Amino acid sequence: MTPVRAPADLIAAVLGGDRRALARLITRVENRAPDALEALARLHPHTGQAAIIGVTGAPGTGKSTLVNALALALRQRGQTVGIVAVDPTSPFSGGAVLGDRVRMTDLAGDGGVFIRSMASRGSLGGLAAATGDVVRVLDAAGFAIVLVETVGAGQSEVDIARMAHTTVVVDAPGLGDDVQAIKAGILEIADILVVNKTDRPGAQNTVRALRAMLELGHRLRNAGHHGAGLLPAPLEALAVDSWTVPVIETIATEHTGIADVLAALDRHRAHLHGTGEIADRERQRVEAELLARLREALLARLLAAHDPATLAETVRRVVARELDPASAVQALVAAACGDGSAPPA
Amino acid sequence: MTDEKIRVLIAKPGLDGHDRGAKVIARALRDAGMEVIYTGLRQTPEMIAEAALQEDVHVVGLSILSGAHMALIPRILEQLRAAGMDDVLVLVGGIIPDDDIPALREQGVSAVFGPGTNTDNIVRFIRTALAAPSA
Ligand code: B12
Ligand SMILES: Nc1nc2c(ncn2[C@@H]2O[C@H](COP(=O)(O)OP(=O)(O)OP(=O)(O)O)[C@@H](O)[C@H]2O)c(=O)[nH]1
Ligand SMILES: [Mg+2]
Image 1 (cartoon, rainbow over the protein chains, first blue to last red):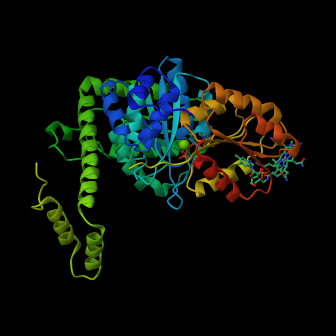
Image 2: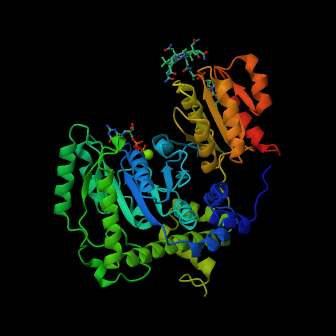
Image 3: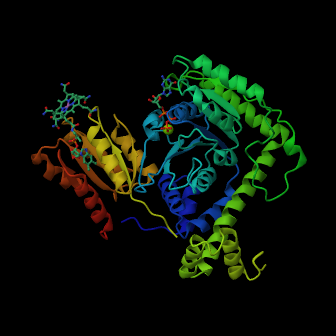
């Protein structure tokens, strides 16, 4: 019934604050529709204004409840808030139940908030492949703050740390001591640690354990943010970070401690700008993104250059031990690119 | 390469606390490969329309077992229209007396599914309705 609008139209509407158009554009971007690339290219000059805040942590620690409380507090300060909440796609059916909105009902009816649920669609690492692009659309649409809730995971989620300016890791009492090792991984990406559910028994133990672990490890500047390796890391990237990760206690269901989290977010943003680290992070983010897109594009081209029968035959030969995987790849690349080292410029 | 999924909002309007059916449907649609946004209990018509718009869903599924459907559904349909979401497929499930169904369909509800409905029928209905040219 509703006519499909051309990207130029849709983009003008999004920039003009049309929420229906925004929702539709997000769908196109999420579906990787053919015109989404053009839309993103046109929106790119309008991005770079929003503060992007990642919220991650184990399942059920209270990420959505915290996002709800934080967004409410940000709205009280007059800042507009875009929210992207990612939940896992079922590997069996490809479907998903996205339930984060259940905890965000305080934000209903506020035109300064836009909440979008996303399924991970097979992507690992806590986000969907298109999450970065959806965040960019919200940024271009003018939201001052974009909050990104990852899939509940307890592993080191470097993806969110690469995408966000500030990463908040949420922990809660009662997750068991056996997750200490996992916590070590996620500590590396935390700019702010929140111990939520401090109304529950054992909260002080969790706080103490996290503080102890923070004291043990000297955090390297930008730990978890690099690793893309497209450009050599500048020397100062190895200097010890001057930011001290705060551990903040909250009861998100009661909006307790939220002002402290907000203050820490403000301090971290001031730190990023004051030290110039914001530029480092932005460069590393772009670098990681370019690499990921290059990988995807080159792989698609390489696969397209080969007859599926050739690929099947290669698999058969490796299985039969006639060929080893590394040599097989070398041969496939060489056949597609000519000399096997690099595609012609 | 596009990767389209059927997106469905499942909402519990009003003060009705019976959420088993809504959860059963959410899971069944997920298992059929759809992306289901579950809103939880106590949703007002305004909240439902707002969520449907932000999530850009193809289908809005309402689960009502409280008997308040004749009061709630017209207001929800009105809010959906006001939000420009008049092209979504609206489905209703729960305890709906047969006598009420013609009036609901008249107002714009596409189908009503009562207790004991096989979820396969619901999946098939959604797929067929969205494949039709008017959807
Ligand atoms: C279990 C139950 C409860 C449980 C609910 C637990 C829960 N969390 O859901 C409890 C004990 C809490 C409960 C409480 C009450 N209940 Co009760 N309850 C039932 C009962 C026995 C079964 C409901 C159920 O879960 N069925 C299983 C699910 C899977 O079926 P379903 O919801 O019908 O869903 C199917 C279809 O309807 C459809 N469907 C449902 N939703 C949707 C949505 C979409 C989009 C689609 C496509 C399809 C669809 O597909 C499903 C699969 O086939 C029914 C009687 C009955 N046989 O239906 C009474 C019933 C619903 N309850 C009733 C009443 C009155 C109450 C109370 C008011 C009792 C009281 N006085 O305290 C309270 C109110 C609670 C509240 N806050 O709202 C009445 C409602 C009367 C009416 N509407 O006129 C019923 C009909 C019993 C009766 N015959 O009187 N109840
Ligand atoms: N006691 C207590 N419960 C809380 C608190 N914060 C959240 N909860 C409850 O914890 C449960 C999970 O909260 P969510 O916000 O959905 O947690 P989540 O981390 O987003 O969960 P996933 O997205 O599934 O990983 C809900 O029942 C919340 O009401 C808190 O501070 N104290
Ligand atoms: Mg959540």
